[in-house]
Image (cartoon, rainbow, N blue to C red; front, side, top):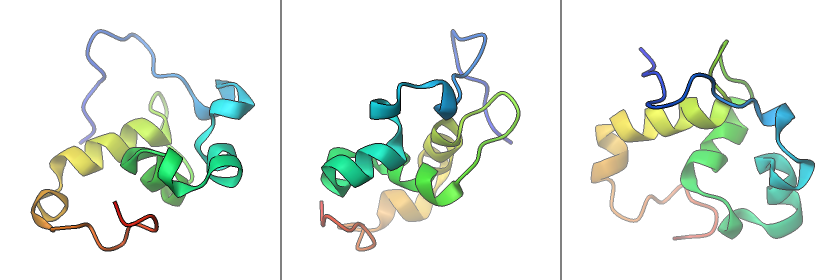
Amino acid sequence: MVQKPTGMTTNPRIKDMAAKDRPRERLAAEGADALSDAELVAILLRTGMQGYSAIHIAQQLLARSALWRNWPGRPWRICGR
């Protein structure tokens, strides 16, 4: 179950963001180091759900994932952070 964003009535869709701010475009222009973990996961998800952007869904997945919190070094990161 996805939690509703607190203090927000709507969650902005990625396609409503300025092109320079969209995760996929930023990945191409600036590289993986410039993106947050949630933005990288959002790219893999490709789509959100009605009322929730892929970024919001990715944030929820990362926040709830015990594997994510307990995996030292998060080896799947391209940039090695």
